[in-house]
Image 1: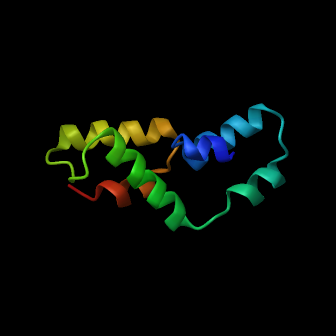
Image 2: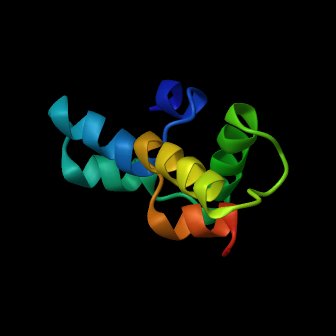
Amino acid sequence: MRSRIGKGYGPIRIRQDLYQRGIDDDLIDSELTCSSERWLELAQTVREKRFSPTEPGDRNVWNAQARFLARRGFPADLIYRVLGQL
């Protein structure tokens, strides 16, 4: 799990990977339930590393960044918090 977090994957992707490896759901829940601020911080870092630290200027850029974060396994509520509303 630490390896996936270090690579910039979100809780949805990590949960899926652990489930496919046969890890018990209760153990997955206990490990992934950390503060939403931690996941928010990770999502911001991943976005800034891939794109720029400035907020997306138009809808196409916003959509591209949102799709990137979704593929990384971040939930929609965190994506909206990271990117803001256009």
